[in-house]
Amino acid sequence: MSKIHHPTDKAPSPDLFGGQRLSAARRRIAAAVPSIGGAFTAEDLHEVVSAGDGPGIGVATVYRAVSAMTAAGSLAAVGARDGSTLYALCTGGEHHHHLVCTGCGIVVGIGCPIDGALRRSAEEAGYTVTSHEVTLYGLCRACAKERA
Amino acid sequence: MSKIHHPTDKAPSPDLFGGQRLSAARRRIAAAVPSIGGAFTAEDLHEVVSAGDGPGIGVATVYRAVSAMTAAGSLAAVGARDGSTLYALCTGGEHHHHLVCTGCGIVVGIGCPIDGALRRSAEEAGYTVTSHEVTLYGLCRACAKERA
DNA sequence: GACCTTACTGAGAATGATTATCAGATGCAG
DNA sequence: CTGCATCTGATAATCATTCTCAGTAAGGTC
Ligand SMILES: [Zn+2]
Ligand SMILES: [Zn+2]
Ligand SMILES: [Zn+2]
Ligand SMILES: [Zn+2]
Image (cartoon, rainbow over all chains, first blue to last red; front, side, top):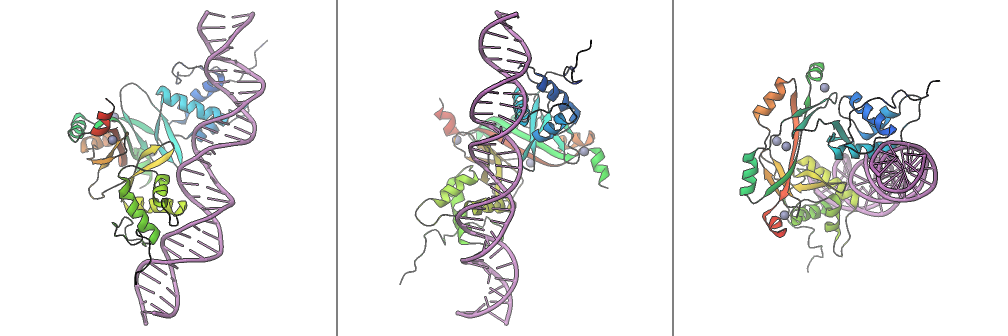
């Protein structure tokens, strides 16, 4: 006899939750995130993960998963769209920032432009820099071409 | 005979609204903004401007004024606090960004670290950078000393 | 100064993203 | 296998911000 299960329930997916408990809902969410391929809102993710026939996933669970992934460093906030926070998959590792295509939402990592000189000039003015936020917006090649 | 008026009604205040209509409410708001001396939320501003005995100013008017000042370039968003957007007085003029003291909220302008090299490397990767957001967070001398 | 047009005001309702609640389900260490 | 801490999900609650709309008042013009 064959077990009845949803095809995506046990799909191997990258550990985006950083050691936290891995439930069926979180497995489906972790599998859905890379399938979006760009910046997304929590509601976007909720729609993707709730599409199809099987039972959906509660919106609160999606918001909690996004928080957990962001805390784990596998997701990063990359701006906002119509009052909703935009998130994107983040490779973690080396410190970096993101460039978001405002046309299609694709996101690429960029090096950090906050260098020692800037930091030093701030310190000379009496300020200690503890953190920073940098996000670039632009157009990918395809979207730039499309608007010609 | 002396005219009866609210002391702040006609106080000369910098034109933060960029040519738009200057009402009594906006004059009071424009006078209140510099008195805060750092980052503030719309609700903060509403409280400051509504303190005292005379009639307050509607919260919607404050939100509208903040939008207008931001559009005029005299105010800039410098992050968020507890889900509310933080704003700060911005000198306009030369392109720059802001460093916010997370202790007391004081804000100073900083030069733009997005240089031609970064822009060029993005273009080599096929991306055209159209805009960017940069904000630094840290501690001013007084706040750094205070936590010793 | 009177007039007119149009932008601004303000109270309150509406919107909408995100979070809190809480009882039930379930991952997972031991 | 068991125990329990964590996760889930439906729903209610929160709360920043925007909308509505009738009334007010800038500011230009004559
Ligand atoms: Zn694109
Ligand atoms: Zn950086
Ligand atoms: Zn400070
Ligand atoms: Zn810049």
